[in-house]
Length: 337
Ligand SMILES: [Zn+2]
Picture 1: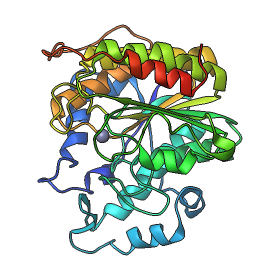
Picture 2: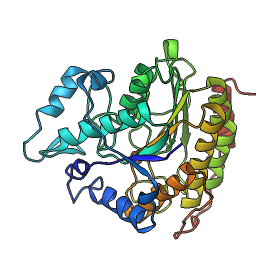
Picture 3: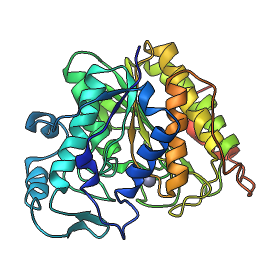
Picture 4: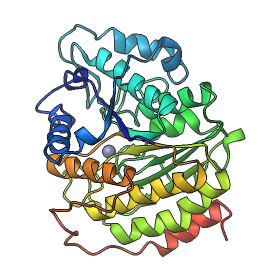
């Protein structure tokens, strides 16, 4: 199985250099992959714009029209921190299409797309996100018949409120999120476990500020693994945000690059054990550029099944708070033990 990545230069044209979510993020990633000889080892998969049908499986026509209206216009804002420039609509369609292509066709890879997606709800842009790329990808995989059940793991430091909203009543898609709590966007309480037919298919792990490598490892071992085994997916998608690193400027968590690489390896191992190795990562946040680039590089080592991890920044200098009570509550909410 070849490891693939999705990329197109249009992803650099959604840009506002003074904003933390700018094109420099992707440039840093591509530069490091090139410098370390990683790009040459991967298959580049050319994205295409998401079709109307694909986007409408997740978003309302009104939301799509609102984003489209910003095309070719000057800088504008769709919410207080979500900018749009002349080519943002095209970039966002290509980001969703890139994830749809990768999730629908290739079993092992990483969609290096922008703008990010997990805050975008069915009806609106939010938190730097225009269209929900991972949600479009999940629905594309389900529609293609390649998968009947999709497990989404979201290790971005922020709760993917948009992804939860899309899938909370859908029994075919499991949504698992670790996030700093309380923090932006405010959602993601452990008692939110899904609704109606989707009850039990949302796993929220709202972590106090300061949790790092050992806390995250416990969450994966004691909560994510047993629930993924219970759900038994055909495909794993990962909302990969690297803003839970201890050096990230937008949050206060304590993961190291080594801790992140261990999470990526756990997810690849989970895919190997549960769904024939089918796993696709998609880029979400991460705002310290050198950390972000190394986080993505290490994820490719994990996808390739290699032990290499580059961690020039080392472990967090701070200690972690206990999470025993939280783990117990989440277990009770999901009838584990
Ligand atoms: Zn984030």
